[in-house]
Amino acid sequence: MTQDDINAIAARVISIEADALYKMAGDLPTDFAGAVDTILQTKGRVIVSGVGKSGHIGNKIAATLASTGTPA
Image 1: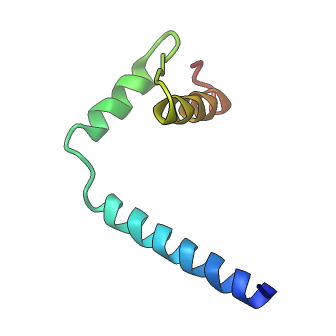
Image 2 (image 1 turned 45 degrees about the vertical axis):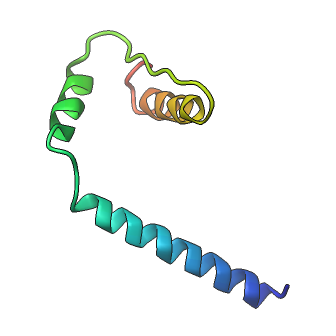
Protein backbone atom coordinates (compact mmCIF):
# COMPACT_ATOMS: atom_id res chain seq x y z
CA MET A 1 0.00 0.00 0.00
CA THR A 2 1.42 3.38 -0.98
CA GLN A 3 1.39 6.56 1.07
CA ASP A 4 -1.21 7.97 -1.33
CA ASP A 5 -3.44 4.92 -0.70
CA ILE A 6 -3.09 5.34 3.06
CA ASN A 7 -3.83 9.07 2.84
CA ALA A 8 -6.89 8.43 0.66
CA ILE A 9 -8.24 5.88 3.14
CA ALA A 10 -7.57 8.23 6.07
CA ALA A 11 -9.32 11.10 4.27
CA ARG A 12 -12.33 8.87 3.56
CA VAL A 13 -12.56 7.72 7.18
CA ILE A 14 -12.30 11.30 8.46
CA SER A 15 -14.99 12.39 6.00
CA ILE A 16 -17.33 9.59 7.13
CA GLU A 17 -16.75 10.44 10.81
CA ALA A 18 -17.27 14.17 10.16
CA ASP A 19 -20.56 13.41 8.39
CA ALA A 20 -21.71 11.29 11.33
CA LEU A 21 -20.87 14.11 13.78
CA TYR A 22 -22.73 16.62 11.61
CA LYS A 23 -25.83 14.41 11.59
CA MET A 24 -25.56 13.83 15.34
CA ALA A 25 -25.34 17.58 16.01
CA GLY A 26 -28.78 18.04 14.47
CA ASP A 27 -30.32 15.18 16.45
CA LEU A 28 -29.33 15.80 20.09
CA PRO A 29 -31.73 14.27 22.62
CA THR A 30 -34.10 16.66 24.36
CA ASP A 31 -32.53 15.96 27.76
CA PHE A 32 -28.93 16.62 26.62
CA ALA A 33 -28.81 20.18 28.00
CA GLY A 34 -30.21 18.95 31.30
CA ALA A 35 -27.49 16.32 31.58
CA VAL A 36 -24.79 18.91 30.86
CA ASP A 37 -26.29 21.29 33.42
CA THR A 38 -26.38 18.53 36.04
CA ILE A 39 -22.69 17.79 35.49
CA LEU A 40 -21.79 21.49 35.62
CA GLN A 41 -23.72 21.98 38.88
CA THR A 42 -22.13 18.97 40.60
CA LYS A 43 -20.17 19.99 43.69
CA GLY A 44 -18.31 16.70 44.15
CA ARG A 45 -17.02 14.10 41.76
CA VAL A 46 -18.84 12.86 38.70
CA ILE A 47 -18.93 9.05 38.82
CA VAL A 48 -18.66 7.31 35.46
CA SER A 49 -18.84 3.52 35.23
CA GLY A 50 -19.08 0.76 32.69
CA VAL A 51 -17.88 -2.72 31.76
CA GLY A 52 -16.07 -3.68 28.58
CA LYS A 53 -16.28 -1.12 25.79
CA SER A 54 -18.56 1.14 27.83
CA GLY A 55 -15.93 0.98 30.59
CA HIS A 56 -13.28 2.21 28.17
CA ILE A 57 -15.59 5.02 27.10
CA GLY A 58 -16.28 5.80 30.77
CA ASN A 59 -12.54 6.05 31.41
CA LYS A 60 -12.19 8.46 28.49
CA ILE A 61 -15.09 10.59 29.74
CA ALA A 62 -13.61 10.65 33.25
CA ALA A 63 -10.19 11.66 31.90
CA THR A 64 -11.74 14.40 29.77
CA LEU A 65 -13.75 15.75 32.70
CA ALA A 66 -10.67 15.68 34.93
CA SER A 67 -8.62 17.53 32.31
CA THR A 68 -11.22 20.32 32.25
CA GLY A 69 -11.28 20.72 36.01
CA THR A 70 -14.28 18.55 36.88
CA PRO A 71 -13.14 15.79 39.25
CA ALA A 72 -14.31 12.41 37.99
